Image (cartoon, rainbow, N blue to C red):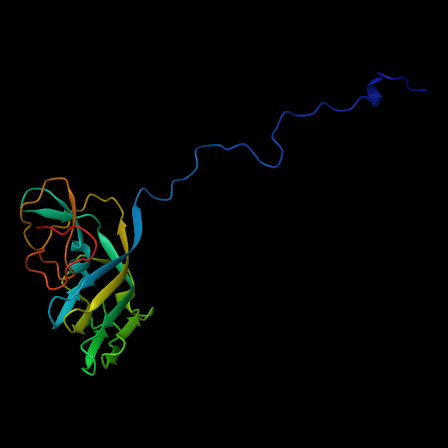
Amino acid sequence: MMRRGDKATRKPARQNRPRGRSAIPHPPQLPSYGITRDVRMRFQATAGAESGVTFQNLLDTVLVATSATTGVDLFEQVRVNSVELWSIAALGTPSTAILVFDGTTAGAAGDMKTHTDTSMGVEPAHVKARPDPLTQAGQFQASSANAAFLLDVAAGTVIDVSLTFRQPVLGVANSSQNVLVGATPGAIYYRGLDGKTAALTNFPVVGAISVI
């Protein structure tokens, strides 16, 4: 008869290994040091106008001053998620808002669809549209003079642009297309939707500090 303590009845020693996982052989992979930011920006038309908005215009809306008169974009790439318009005139007076993703350049082509609504002054004309996902206008784009979309709006039209900005931290510095006025080096500023200074833009940013 086996007695307690005999070798045949001893239980194997428990191994000192964590349950449910194996040892990590090295630090985990880092997916990216880049910065991606979703933002909804609001602008308002000072005067009625038909105006094209480029990808450079969109990237110039958020910039960092490098001197009193020069600046670089905070982000390197941008994607248009949607554009929304509200427009109204006096009672009984028509007011029309038009939006077209009109890019014709290879690599940044739009869907060329016209999105429009007309108000009779009782409630605002309202347009909300996004670029067709099968077109390049709805994909990330670098700074360029290629058309992102076309606006044809009346004075007072409120314009909301939903964007995704991306900065992959590659050391690329996109210079602002128009000079700054009285900026503080290192400070972050917002600009109008047409890339111009606060004194000249027809589409000033609402609720943020513009470059002066």
